[in-house]
Image (cartoon, rainbow, N blue to C red; front, side, top):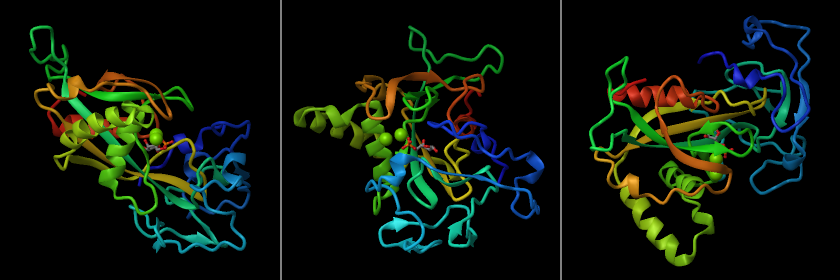
Length: 279
Ligand code: RP5
Ligand code: MG
Ligand code: MG
């Protein structure tokens, strides 16, 4: 796997904790580094013992690298090492030990729904990029409340939840604000969602996410799936409304010029290339 960069951001998100600086050539655990002294940090919100978080290690000894009750502690990238009872980040050092803002020791599983359509002009013709001459894709993007960055409306897989359901649920919560809808509105939203997610979609990524919240012992992994509406008729009618961890929601042109949260640009690049779209 590629060396993470955002997982080494100097200031840990949502805190005033600074990571122990890790240079590129010291990221790999295989590189001996006797002076490595990562800062230990687990956010107060995690230590409060919410239902989505593990207890602190000590009396708690989860089954790593396996299904642990309904919690999936297997990694998409293979078997990870466990040292002194703590799982080791498969991408190497981050300068921070503990869990930071993440609830699970080891992999924290997420799913990322990428809903796309072609960008069209007022006459309904597909818009081509002036340089690449390739048609431009647009995806439904949310502005994350935690960091203000634009992102795919993804979220965590609940224990026992199948990823196909996480994709639909997170899209509904963050891009359609389904949590605040009335029972009647919920029913209508559910109908649209079922239609939109009725195709299997195109899996564009499965693996480690270079997320700024990652630590030496906790990290994000995801499955990113592209649901594309060729005519755009159906997705263009979706009642976009930001909800949950999203502050805004809108259609965003797909391309290398737009900076996105964590490794999300990488997922969109794959989707664009697979669909012969501009990147
Ligand atoms: C990223 O964090 C994943 O790619 C996914 O988009 C997101 C899940 O975390 P929350 O949105 O629930 O914070 O690593
Ligand atoms: Mg969410
Ligand atoms: Mg989310």
